[in-house]
Amino acid sequence: MNKFIWTTSLIVALLALIIVIMSFTSKAIETPEYKVVKTIDEVEIRLYPKMLVAKTNLADKSFDDQGSNGFRTIAGYIFGGNENNQKIAMTSPVVMNMGDSSSMYFVMPKEYKKEDLPVPSSNAVLISEVASKTLAVVSYGGYSSDKKIEEHIQILSKILQKEGLKTKGDFMFMGYNAPWDVINRKNEVAIEIEM
Image 1 (cartoon, rainbow, N blue to C red):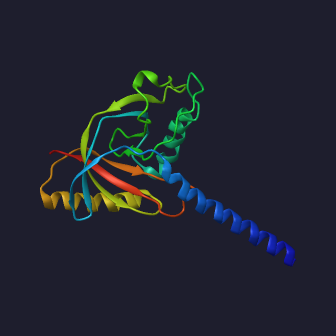
Image 2 (image 1 turned 120 degrees about the vertical axis):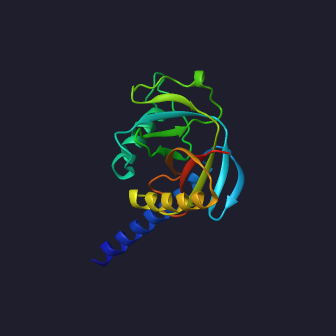
Image 3 (image 1 turned 30 degrees about the vertical axis):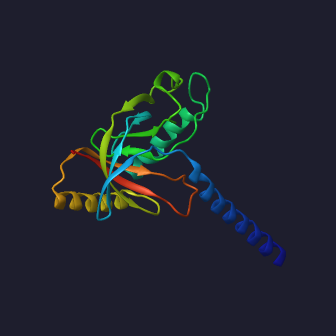
């Protein structure tokens, strides 16, 4: 019995160590470059360049209900679900537009132009460009849920209202970590603002 407990404890410890190591190694993933224009309390005002994205539309704006489905659809494309069976490097964040016409997208690595990307095997994946924009962003840690996203939308909304900043479009959720990252998780809620 002692041998079983010792072996089980060792396996659990090794799995925990692997998860921690994976949490630190995933930080090398490419992220879009942006310029911080201004900081207001816990909000950053960022200027993002135009980006090439692989996008899928979602049935509704619930992260809890749609997040996994959207992620799997786009991940299928970058893991070889395309006409060339070509793998495309993972980037972060994964972005979920939280409006009535909800969608999720991955930013494509900056080495690609639109004509360089393979055609998706699934007609649920679209390749498109997102225009340059100025976003107001608030960050938080841990795992996300509809409740946590809404809490941070409220924080962001109050600060923008207090500052008299006008918004355009819908709120966005931006998640930077793989599900197995258990430490140093980064999430953001953002909305486009008029400058």
